[in-house]
Image (cartoon, rainbow over all chains, first blue to last red; front, side, top):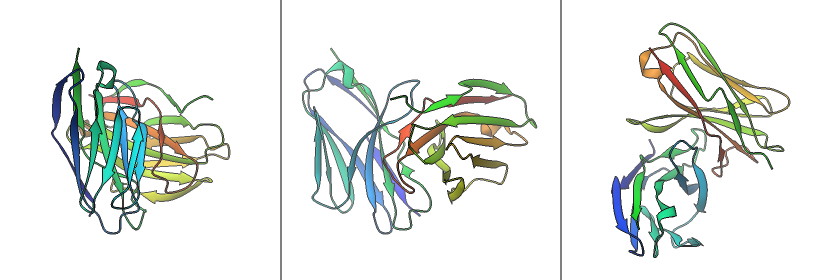
Length: 111
Length: 113
């Protein structure tokens, strides 16, 4: 059974204070690891797909990296508008069970 | 380009009733997936439809069902509602079956009393 654990559950940062969110996973045959952002009252918004260890993707202040057991979402010099819940999900080799999501990291950026 | 549209946005039902939720995917997207989101369990996969056929199914009881129409619009139905079915039900569309790059709607929030 695929499993995803995200840490920390919540993180409060000052504007401009860089940090990283962690996503640990166990999956049989990783087909893809996905990062989403979810704002209150909204559905998740797709950010990145990572397929293999060593891969990195960047978008504005966010950079996602992948190893064989975990992924990190690095946030550089965050702004208040980066406040959201960040969700990590994996898709296993069979692909028949949809995405397995972690419970997310609730990020608050204080001005 | 219009996003994924879900209706209704909010609804309240009582135990034992049934409910039908509707989802219109992004134009051109033929894959529609449904997820249940609760504070305790997070997001859990219900099922995926592509070209009117259920392609994948999560670990939910048979009370949860769905269908997809020829225009790719989808509905999900929950029969004999239980208190534990209270959740945000999210629909997501994609360009291909089994894709992990999903475009989510804002969800239908179901409260069961």
